[in-house]
Image 1 (cartoon, rainbow, N blue to C red):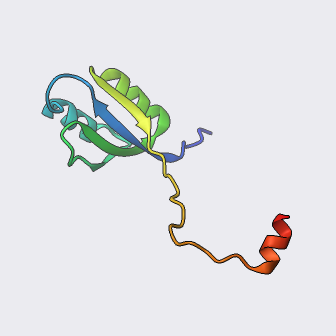
Image 2 (cartoon, rainbow, N blue to C red):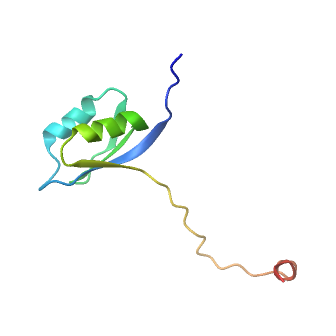
Length: 91
């Protein structure tokens, strides 16, 4: 039995001259198992698919690189008042 790979998001970035080639974008859209989520930037595509499938696709496209999308948790910008209990635990 073949186990399915989990889906992940990747950024495909065109590193060649000019904007991303329309033929390459069409090829990515036609690739089974890869979904284009966003193509609004001139040199990048946000795609979702199995890691091996996306990396294999990027390797076949000249001038493209793939990197896994990473979420960064932002710190809470609101200051908090320390309580006496919290300062005792810190000491």
